[in-house]
Length: 288
Image 1: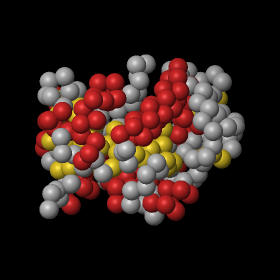
Image 2: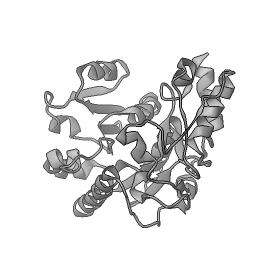
Image 3: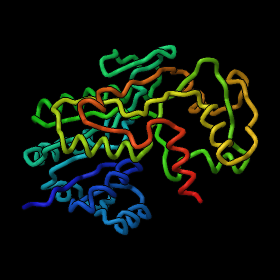
Image 4: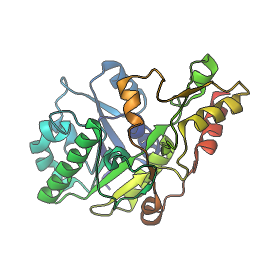
């Protein structure tokens, strides 16, 4: 029996967590990067590295049964479709599943109301607009090549080495408060299990919000991290006067709560970390 092979384009944080689950099950994983040090890390983790710009991609994609796209679009569009569309056409007959990692930013601002996969896409940031276009481009390619494509709209990602504890301990964490602002989040382990569930239960044209059950104000998350550490709460800073980078400030331009019912009902996902409190407790246990 042929071993399943996942080609991971832009083998980042979420894809690496998926690989940790698939490799012990007998999968071959090929991951791309532009960083030599990361390529060495991939190799140590059992992932076959492809150094973009140095290693030829087409031979490594050949025979892939699954394709995961994590790399984000730029002003010229989706980088995989821009540079490797013809290669994808050649590989299409062997692909059983294609996953595209998008973002809940495609929904735009909804004034704190709930959104789901049927909500019209009205992104208000340049990043969101590019993601919306990339989703559309992938859908068209999937239609043209008869690919089994699923799109995953990820909320804010946290997990090992991406939690708030280091900043709280260092005294650099900030509780920036904007009235009524909430964000949805997702632990990286739950992203990985949602992707694996889709691989095991593929649904043509599936689009899924990947988030936990509890949208929450960002200051609550920082406050809870400080509470777990037994440290004083960082002082409150009003959003209107807080010093922030344009990128950081842009995240506050969109306010919504994201539903995850489709992920649970169609993929059978039971969240490991259904809210930020269970997630942060688990991360702190890893730190100790």
